[in-house]
Picture 1: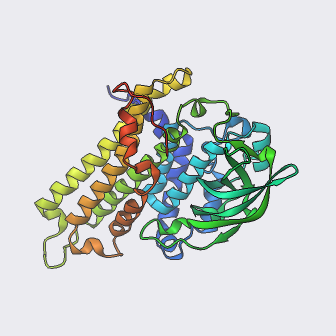
Picture 2 (picture 1 turned 60 degrees about the horizontal axis):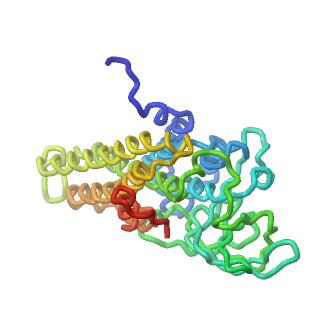
Picture 3 (picture 1 turned 45 degrees about the vertical axis):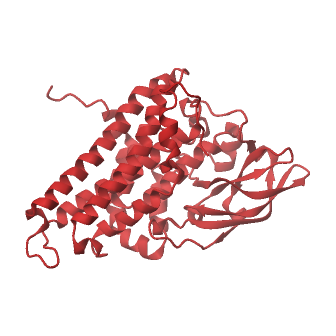
Length: 386
């Protein structure tokens, strides 16, 4: 029917997704700078912060956005359409914020300045890998160690560190970024602007009240924390990152398709083999996007009703990991079809190809996610994130 909103409009048109799209031109204009310097400019970080995009998964009671997973998907998608590195830093912050919500709301709110006008301006990053050791302290822990791949740590206000406590249990600690030292180590083929450096602690003090057990009770209230495996909600953002990066490659290449390739006077758009590959890539990316939207729309009501449907949530996990792999393959298809010019750094296709190759190394894209996604359907017990 004419004028009827499509079923996913409330998420695509959410104010947070619109805020991300408004930032696209400014981010795109700085993409070369971000790539070359290996860091997102402070003014862009502040612009993203002011719009609430670093607090997507912070609980509402701690003055966060507590956004629907599909809203998070579309925010990251929009940012990645402009620049994959910028989107990755926001993505990681959204994922780690889910962990920080295990702290009591009053504690978390106090730590991140939750009552600041406009909401907290925090940027929480970190790692769930056990990279630190703990020594006893009268009222907490002294942590030492070195976290790696801490995307966005340069601009972070807080960092989540993981350690083993004195009862051999995995615990997390939320620390101010200044409690550690940033060690510049990030030098990778893609996502070069994420500043995914190491962060080193040397006897940093963490109050016990600022730590929580990995298997402890969840303090936050909301469906995001009712899902049996928190990685499922976290990793829809990886799907958004892949879809946005791949669609950005398609849109940029469509503009460049009027150019001839080296050794051939015909423009790309005038060559049928290129058009066929472009069409297949577009269909693959669009299908991956739609699968994420459809599966999450069907599954989320069961979570909101506190009766998670494991079969439907399994399909959400499949949609997440499928989106990453499909988008990597689609941009690989475009890269091959683009001819020699595809390797030129004057085209964004080369960068987006490298960015997606690097993004695929994240846990969200590991093969076990496919297995985890079908276990409930086959009557098998759940498989947790590694």
